[in-house]
Amino acid sequence: MSNKVSYKIVLFTLVAVQIGCATYYTKSKNTELAILDYNYIKAEQKIESNRYLGKKRNALLYYLEMAKINHLKGDYKKSIVNFQYADFLMDQYNSVADIAVGMAINPAMQPYRTEPHEQILSHYYNALNYLYLNNTEEAVVEARKINLREQALLVSAKGKETKYSQDPFGLMLMGMIYESDNDYNNAFIAYRNAYEAYNNTEIEAFCNMPSYLVSDLIRVSKLAGIPHQLKDHEVNKINSTKGEGGELILFWENGLVPVKMEKNLFFTLIKSKESGLYIFMDSEHLIQIPVDYDFESNSSNFEPSDLGIIRLAYAYYVDRVPQIRSAKLTANEESISLQRGESVGQLAFQIERDNYFKKLAKRLLRLAIKKLAEIKISKENEYLGLAVGITNAATEKADTRNWQSLPNDIHYARIPLKKGVNKIELKTDQDTSISIEVEGNGGMVFRNIATH
View 1 (cartoon, helix red, strand yellow):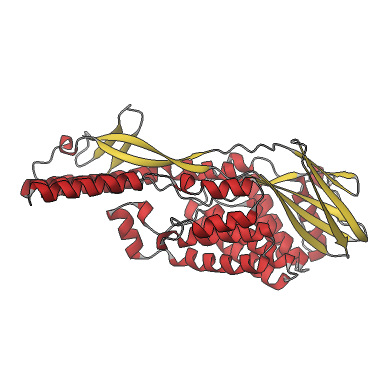
View 2: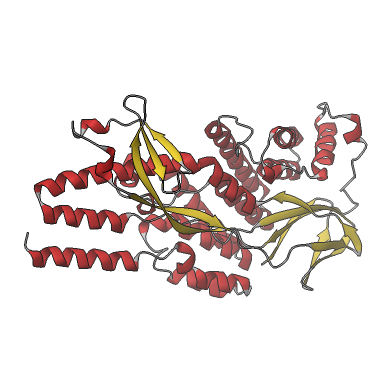
């Protein structure tokens, strides 16, 4: 290979690095600004024109972002269609080829894979879409999908109480949907599972059980004819949320979920005292990750120093602290308690902690293997080895994608309705006020309000 050709390879690769270094957050900043301005038509346009979301590997992310904005805009039928596409892709992106691409190149080059809480929230929004359209039957289908996601979550976490192994909010939502369909047996099971999930978990995101849940569990246990087995002091705290005109379940979604940024970590490989065991050590000697891989199989004269310093581009969450921190809710001028249902932001950080070392070990091993290949090629062809090394550097990029239009927190209230028109008002600590009117017709009504 001539020096001229090798120079062109280097130049092309360096340009590619500069073009591709931006995070998903920076590429979607205009969408965020439109959301913060409550301009959902503009937000739709920004998502549609986002070339990054137009890439095939980002199709799932495109449909999730678009479906959420459709929902906020009130276009529930279009939102349903986009969530259906997203639901299909969630179950399709598990092929061997995609996994191979991630191991050989980079997870950022794979099709986007949702986190478990994102999957559950996609069904939350689609269930609301159907409920707004008075299609309880399809909302029940979404409840069943949530149940499948919950089961998969429990299996993947292996029941560990210190990990995100169940989502009580998803379970409570299932109970609400079943209850609205007068399926009290399934409603009772869902509420009971949510109650047990709160009591059995040790993670911060679920440290406070909503008092509504106890009332819900006792109420549907009577309707289903199933003993609730709650303690006396809990039974004495129940409050009725049913009025002559029925009940409103109101969700208040506030803020925007944390986003992912990129940072660089530097590791060296050292040999452990145990035979055949190596350890990756970071530059500050704070992180030690053992790896069980036979490096000697590539070379009988292998030394850990052959790899030199390994640079790992890693994604980490950064909080977007909501401007609105609290709100007061009134129904027909009477104060109503708002209680936290889901802390999406806290869950994002919890999942990051749960998977940190597992992902780190996998990516370090991938980089080490690529480095060994680079060294081997360099011994045979210096220029080709240089090209491979620069290409490896160019493709070492953190996967900074996540569903960014999700709220930071979801609070909810169960509100007794009078017959006829009910006036509901939410006043925030930023002197903003949102008012809605709900017709009390004797049944359960679902509404959601978003503030950013």
